[in-house]
Image (cartoon, rainbow, N blue to C red):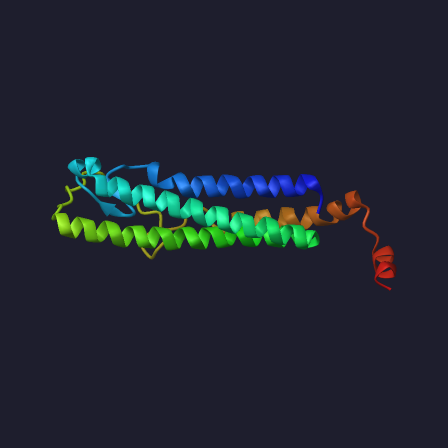
Length: 172
């Protein structure tokens, strides 16, 4: 794996880790891990602690997984793409574990304080395609995309200069 590839994938890991650590601070402040809280709960130190703990736990997971990834990458640089991709997936799993713990804490806090959620006046549209709704795009659009991919496939081999006889001779 070249240095440029490692830098690109490592920067992707860092961006994903940063996004996962800060996601609790982005969005509606009255919704804490899917639990709707009243406005007065925003000033509660326990709510702030739940958000801070999620951020710290996710950042801790990111540092540990990233460190293990770099150690493994130094031992087996040929498997760099597999290692870095696995670390990103493992970080997402660890983040969902931290989110689950934080959601349980938010549920317990809401029940202990007796907070009641304000009735939402916002309405959302259902984007699911069920029996009542037809899909936005028909399957013909996806077939057209697949046709373009199939048509461009031989062009990709021509540009790369792939020769099947040389590939077969290298295996021997």
